Image (cartoon, rainbow, N blue to C red; front, side, top):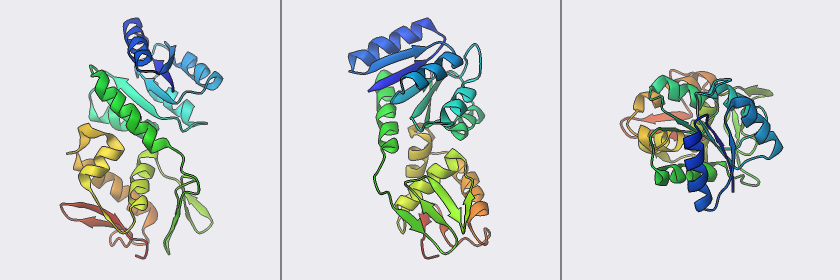
Length: 225
């Protein structure tokens, strides 16, 4: 598997190259955003490990540049610990956010999890309701003939729920699958994003028929409303 490591710290680049190669990864590196975008276009990676504090642009701009043409898993590696920074990166299209310093075993587990979520499933199902349709293969939601614009985080939540239609998905599982294992108690994230999804998808957001809350437990996607 080919990994693109983007960081302006030479020591981190060297350590990541040694550790990833020792575990069988091919490693490309870039020390700024422009070089990262060029490297990804020239030799598409299987996963991108991205620092946010680059000398020529913000890491968020790199995420947006990549998301313009690829769904490659992007894992942010950053010393920035604020929740707003994490949410901003995830909304821009990152798949995960790991704060520095981190253990190599944890990072490898995050890489494997991101890969599992990104595996293309042929003939992925289409989940239809009377109000909207979720195409899991095309990663799009439509209402009638119009596409509903979702943020990457909104889509990820809806995808997990739609793939488990009719079944309760716990808050902890949603938080783990969407934000990672360090966010399993941040239930306020779910409340905010579920409210946004209901405003975009439910005929009457105040009385949801499809995105159901099971108080204190989790959420359920009901196809039949």
